Length: 323
Image (cartoon, rainbow, N blue to C red; front, top):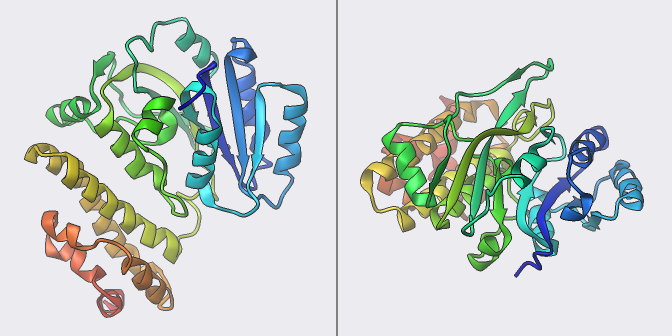
């Protein structure tokens, strides 16, 4: 269990991020709260630039900043798990190093009784910063919500509301809630937070939503989302569809809610069926080998055959790729 001698542990995976470190960490340090009330845990995932040296300078002048170094690159999920295991805060905030937090978000939260009654997840909103520096955000709910995670998913289904930010950085998680339910991130994969977030909401007894902006998501050219597509990203996109479907199959019994949660997964399968053609033929074997380790049959239970049959083996991948 977490030591809970601070309210919040801000966990930041770092990999070759020297251009972004100052903006991210400075956005936290300039918050109008005492540094003794929170900690920043940076996990260097075996960077080969000077990211580690930059963070060490912060560590030398701020007692609430800790640096943990991986001796090999293990990807973001493993870095987040390392930070979670080292955390001393009652709540956890996973922040990405190329993003930053809004001014005074910590003091806004600290001044309100947000966490009474053992809130498992505190959800808020974000702004996206485009490559040209302009800002935009979706239309968010304008009123607070307090309910279980499953009830919140049902509420979203009943109101056909899909604009809640799904990314893990738009939430604070109660540390003991994560550990008690073994809600760690899958390691060595891309998009690890998609299934993690869904799993957390399903297990949460109490979720609190506040209509505030707490995070700036920066669209960077070389991010996992916008960087060059490769077979690993492709396979892991199929993986999270399978893993999320498995979670829904296990925990969600209401058919209407199942369909609501499965719809974006079906769209993802359809999208990747189309962009399969963008990959090289040599990538197909790697994708097929990766898919062979996944529980593909779960897709047959919920999706039309045309959304999953092309994933069956190398030959079906080649046939689809050749069209």
